[in-house]
Length: 260
Ligand code: COA
Image 1 (cartoon, rainbow, N blue to C red):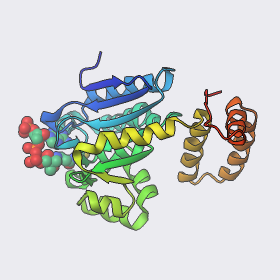
Image 2 (cartoon, rainbow, N blue to C red; image 1 turned 45 degrees about the horizontal axis):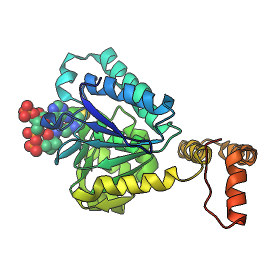
Image 3 (tube, protein in one colour; image 1 turned 180 degrees about the vertical axis):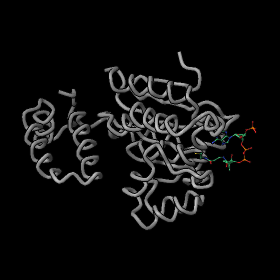
């Protein structure tokens, strides 16, 4: 079904998406973008999938950027289309997924790779991971959301420096500046991501989807964010899961949520 990614679905609904071009350090060519687009569509629409982890194949790289060999074919219009297609069909739809998506960053996360990790709801990285936006070395800028999401995540001054120097930072520095939430040994990376995702999946799915939506709202500086929070808070009061959560607390038992 896919040419360039591997997918695996656990019994409890975790979709693991592995970008699988290790010989090219998992660079994002048009096939990868097409495959990711399908997998993310599946994440949105398949009821059996509850959340996802995105990672890269091999020990060396998460994703080392957009595939530079495809850039030679593009003019200005083609470049604009490349960015638009990637952003609209993959990156934005990961960010806007109502189900949680975690990046498990196992190595180089450069250019489009850093942007892919940043489109996920949060990031866990192995000690071997390296991050950067080196597009400036090619006479370019990030095109898959990097100028916006990096600024939101690490602040204006740090984002300016990283993008303008094209420098690569190691996992420890990425952790220090808040680009990643946790660091692990490489062999524990996927277990750590899975453990955290399982905690999230044990909560009420409608509440999780509202949190994702509202945090996204905050990160783009939507002036109606507080009002939207009040509305969502009120809506959740009408749900079966809210009734279950409150009843379970009062009955001193664990809640069983249904997503309704
Ligand atoms: N696009 C296309 N091919 C890429 C790539 C990319 N973004 N990143 C790596 N590759 C390919 C290399 O061309 C090489 O292919 P080859 O064996 O057919 O020559 C293979 O992946 C291995 O990469 P290599 O450069 O030999 O590994 P390295 O360990 O010496 O260096 C990097 C690793 C990540 C530092 C280096 O590959 C690099 O700088 N990549 C480009 C990063 C970048 O600029 N990304 C943003 C793009 S907008």
